[in-house]
Image (cartoon, rainbow, N blue to C red; front, side):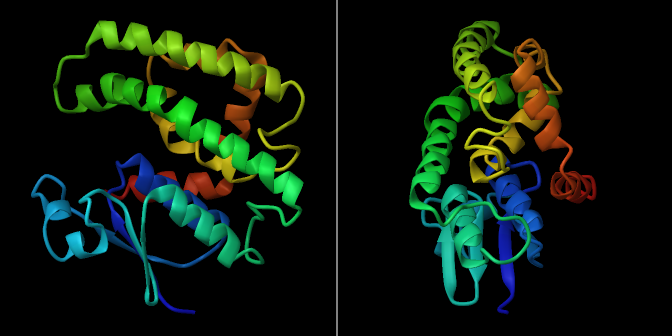
Length: 215
């Protein structure tokens, strides 16, 4: 198997999303840290891997990808027989996985990422949290999680009874938010809370945390 490389940062939610997938699939990879403070993501050689100058970038032999969800989809399909099955060959079941993956990208992540930035990232850099932005996006996230609560009352995971990419994609941002005041939005909804406890306890996710703790 060709060596897989992930160029990014252990503090970047998109990079971590790729790590989680690789660990679930039990695939060996090389992590290439990108110093964003030094602007390495905006110049060569990185810019040749992602012309938009954003992390992560990914290599599998002669295949070069960027955009974390495109990378996770590739890994789930190309290495379908390794590790945890994260996609399903049945087209109708796969459509449900795709649906909830879209919900994560279009409904959950935009508001959750804003909250993570305000409540988790800004304090790290001694920046002032904008309370108005937090209030606005907590209300938006609450509405999204109401839909999740209804869905998770019907199935153990978002796309059915097995853990898939639809669940995995949420992990990095949830990890940040569970260390902030916004954790109440998850904990106050019993089915959402049980789902969060389940997916964050996965052995592959623990490996992601262990990797982060090395840096």
